[in-house]
Length: 174
Ligand code: HPA
Image (cartoon, rainbow, N blue to C red):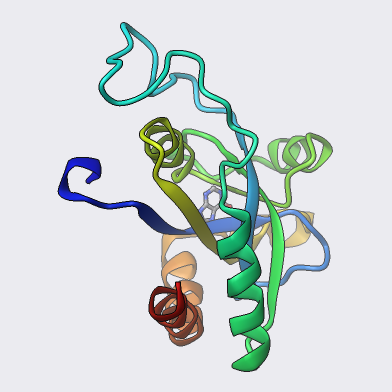
């Protein structure tokens, strides 16, 4: 992507919410992430053509794009939250104890993607913007057994028009 001339990356994902202000269908602007993947995409010999060995991750998610997305959300009556996304490998959904751990660690939602992609993009100096659709809530023990891939797909589909509008406007305005 970098060599094709891409300078900005927009990523989206589905996640389990652990912030009690969230509900199924909430749209979350990712303001930061916690990398809990067992492997690191930049491990191994560094290719200096792509980026430095020790990469600063202090603005993993581009602040200007986040700000712009928030304005677009207000203008279009789209409710958005901002939050920290924690990446775990999966493919299992989390146990209740794991959702609790995610919350204690300071994240607002958890999923199985995005973190490696953003690390690699940042390595190359690509600016990143991420949106997460909360497709299940991991902070309610009673609802835990209901989490299924079908449920995730349904919740994500419901949020699609808002996410589409937000990303479309962001691309147009940025
Ligand atoms: N956990 C991890 N990944 C997910 C979830 C979840 O609860 N929901 C959608 N993707």
